[in-house]
Picture 1 (cartoon, rainbow, N blue to C red):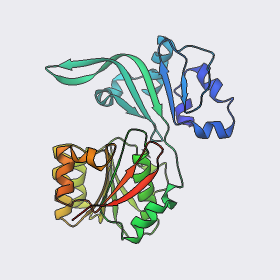
Picture 2: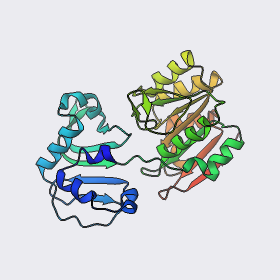
Picture 3: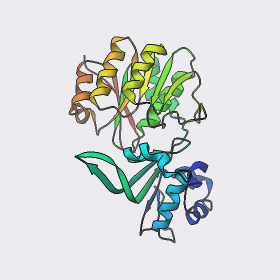
Length: 284
């Protein structure tokens, strides 16, 4: 949380520092919108001040360490990842050139999603996957259902056994949240390709890291599908996540539907908005 406090406007920093420990641990998101009070999700607090354009500018300056150009590539994706794995989402005037998204400017909203260490690696579903020998698994759920957290918990549970070679392709620097070559989470004996595009990272891992398991977050593109198929052909187990309400929903997405039809995944973990997990065996 310290990394988040450092980038917030001073009045909001001061307010959050008045909260007790239980309230701090509950915070999942901090939303800043010009002209409105900040929102701490899921706390229902009425904050006694309004977010100004200057507050947004200050926040962005702190996030970029006073060098906005340093974040140019991340801004093209519409979000920034802070040290510690906290994701900063942005809204404002979108720049489109020849129907291609180029970035965002005149930023009017900032949403900070708080990354947290959990004891989810002790969950019943993860215990069942462990008993089944850590099969290829697709984690699905809607936004804020905890997909990345669940994948990280799988990695933590597996890495603690010291018997598998696990490579994490961490394109958004959220799963392992590497800082100066070390993860801020407890992830022993894991290889991490930090800020590496998923499809490129999968092929790099297969060729040079000899993984028994590859973990990637938020798949969906044709390139992702082709790289995952190559991993399967190479005998590598794949753990991945995808957005979707349920199995039928993700099957409608061509790339993921093809992966499921080709049995790239043996199991699906379905998460709901309450972060409740259900294990589903993929039919052969």
